[in-house]
Image 1: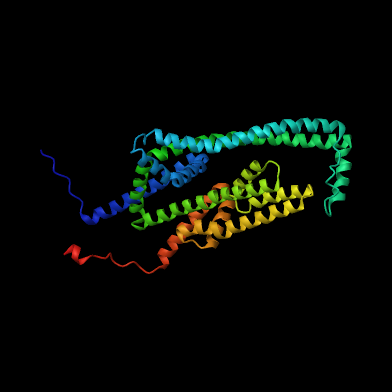
Image 2: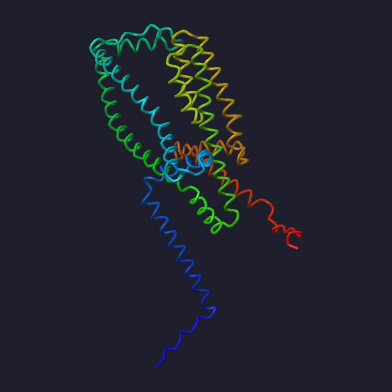
Length: 372
């Protein structure tokens, strides 16, 4: 007896089944996404950093690919650019570590000697205005007396040893994350074009035609933030480094490098040039201290109020207040990573706001001559 064919479900009966399948796929996708985030949560910051580097350097990478006619685009070019980025970060850190090791050796010898002989009050401390005599009295009572100095410096040594053990583990953890960032960056350079096409397809399916515009706003915000924070910060370090050389500040190059690094963080540069001015003031170089303070505030005021808002907000038409809130809020919430993520989130929110509050888009324009 021949088996009878199964009845084809009617359209009204198939519709609930298709809806249930869509809901099931959405629930499964959400569950897998949450599981993936949970598995990778320790490396999410490294992944975001790699994405920021890839977005910021992608135009340079494409120029390199075009200049070499695509030769080595699978391995050589991504590896070379990733290695250069690694060296840009590793060389200054290694140089700083060597200098700190040398300074620590000298400091340890100085502390051991001071615990037996005490530390004489420097001649410039009593000359400080207002607090000079008070500070000199405290120094004489606590550091000039060998017994008191030995007790105080012993407590300081114990605290430094505890901090060294703690931060040693943190440095090792950061080093592992940095290696992971470079590894991820290599693959982003190598497969970035294919990944971009996949993300574009995903945005069309999930968000429609507006998804591409939203992604462009985020990318432009990252580009503007990198230019506005990193490049402008390095520029501040170079300009103030020239000032340090002119006024005769000791070790002007390391101080200028520290100024450029901290200038990436809002209100970070004044800490360095303020400390430099205080040092010059302690050496009774009042004119040099005034020049460093005046030049520092002028450079940072110009950069923070004119250059950075144009570079960061100009690309995405972000108001200055939202640029500042994105930077400071991101820094408060996510640390250094938030400097770049905060403006990108603000750009996405402003893009959605303008889309939802703007006039409704009309039907696409059809050219009669083209479709005749």
